[in-house]
Length: 422
Image 1 (tube, one colour):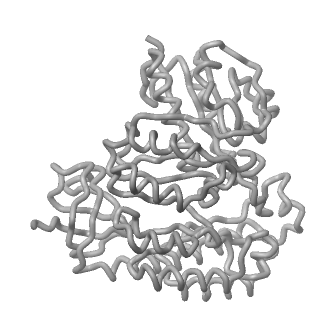
Image 2 (spheres, one colour; image 1 turned 90 degrees about the vertical axis):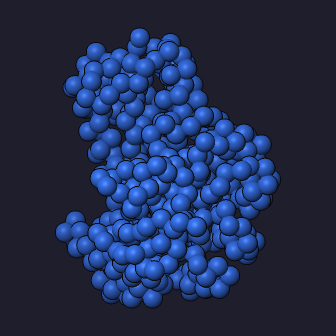
Image 3 (cartoon, rainbow, N blue to C red; image 1 turned 180 degrees about the horizontal axis):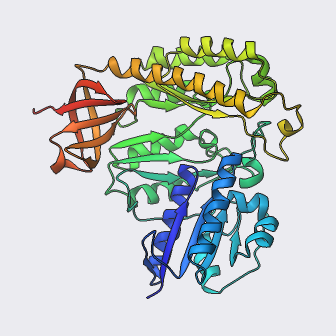
């Protein structure tokens, strides 16, 4: 029996796509191998959102060619779309698949095809799955591509234009995952779901709430301009919608936001945050932040930190600016050294840690619902609906269940909780 191994870098969308490849290979008779064993096929699902992601993709490819020289190596995804000629020449890869034909990966592999089309897909490629084998939570990819073209971002060039999954197929996919207690609706620009097919994300959410039984529904990263009044009302009124939003700000300076081609001002962002919190007081909001952008002055960075601290966010994912060839920002004068960017990451991350700690302390002596995902030593780990990491005492018999817990402490960036016996 032939064996395979899949290595995945990057985002939730990549994780979903890798699960599709895994199930397709199992369906045609392959067996999944172990990371340190030699396998007949190695699939590397790449990322190129930053230079570091591209470097890690190259590392995985080189490692596969070195440690598994007889394997058929398939490299797929964003880095392939932007650098397929380089990868073919440098690594002599057996099969390269970019943004298109992911739904045909196994077919192309079986045919030992070495010629594919690197044009961008014109429509959404459906990649149906039955479960997420290696995790309790499931992702559902409902959208792909991006039309926004932020000046720092390579993803529109790697993924192509926006395209959405047919709404009926979304319900089919969610219902196929009914063994999971939580799904995350994910995409490259999730908040713009449906705009290319005459629909929108709120309409989809309303139908999911009616036509599926999934207990907890989470929305992946969404832009502040896409959190409509109707969506806020839905978050307020529907207990199955997780009370957490991840809303990337990327910069807290109007000048930098403009140079990044972000579609809002700092005032716009703050006003929308206030509107969300007025209607949904229990919601937690986290964000993404890029530091060291070419036009981010020292003063702009310091002012941004004060603005961000006042927002009472639950945490920030902090990234140093990464120059991506072909983007508009790559033509800006590079002002900041790696040392300056690392220092700004360190400072911003310290602020994020403070935010996270302050948020968690507020939950001590309060009840929360936790989806128990795995055993960690003598406790069970999971996330609350607010996306807080929780360690629960005495929950080993309740994995993949949502459990009401009382928070008793905060330790090492986790809430410590006990089950509430009703």
